Length: 157
Image: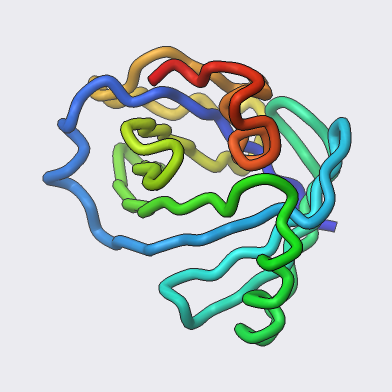
């Protein structure tokens, strides 16, 4: 079983843009969602599809991810709970860690969130100056909430 350990922040400036090393267009949808558990389907650049099961909350969660056929992903997205999330992910290296800056489109246009994956909960990455408030563990900023609870709670944009 894989563990996902990550911290999440709002982004307060465009200072990250000059350091981008990769850009990925993402569409993702949740086909099952409940307290602390989710099943997500994702399309990256329209060519790679994954099915991901996540269990847990906050900083560390169990994560199981499997490659699936693109056509299966497209069909599963038709059964999405709530919205299909659209975002562009920018990979930004900073002092030994790779930050993923997600710029949301569609219903969440204007929202920008940065995440950093950690090897261990004790890791303390240097925080770039373009980060704003830390929102790790705040459900309202999870992709799961943004997809399934839209309209129930303002996400700050």
